Image (cartoon, rainbow, N blue to C red; front, side):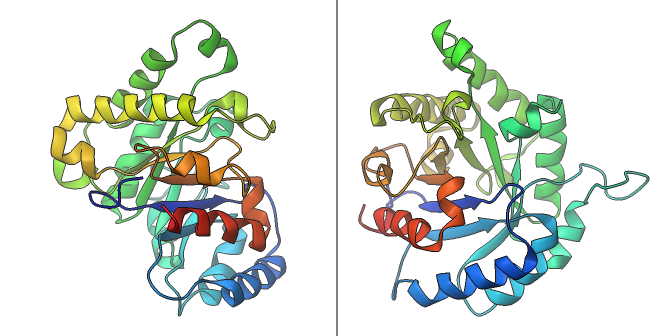
Length: 256
């Protein structure tokens, strides 16, 4: 982490877990153990039906609530989809875009790009996910693959808005598998991501962009991962479903 130049962000991704009632219970517990004083930015990205309960529960706190996806269109005949302005009106600050699980459902880099542009237009902070499969890592094309995802995902994003974008590196082979990239492996890719941003937008903006690690970060490995200079936080899956474990990760970020 480098707090001098950029924000440290710990974001939870609940995926398809918890009901609105369970959300209220989690938020109540989490608020009871929140640290006092200055600490890192914390986001909880929850299922769409849980957003109102999360927003109500965290209204008087610094916790930002986010969604796990949005549609690139403002409105229309898209049954089951949710528009960015709907998320804003519901109280969301963040939205996860391009998660590998969404990409596995057929989402393309062009789809992700359209969603990023829409999110920014509506004032949301996009958490744009990039990452390689085990096969791609073994083939030695991790850097090329992720560079392509970033360039296509950020196409058309102007300099005055790129600072709002958060990039999350999530090696697909480490998501929900219990496997985790070593701190050195994670740092190597996050440093490469910052290099790509530097080439696209310049050194000043590259220094200001927050890059998260999102492959099975938990309360046991968070401190070592967050000690790396180019890892500015985490996109937390399973561990974000437990208030105590999630707070342990927040505390690890605050010690950096």
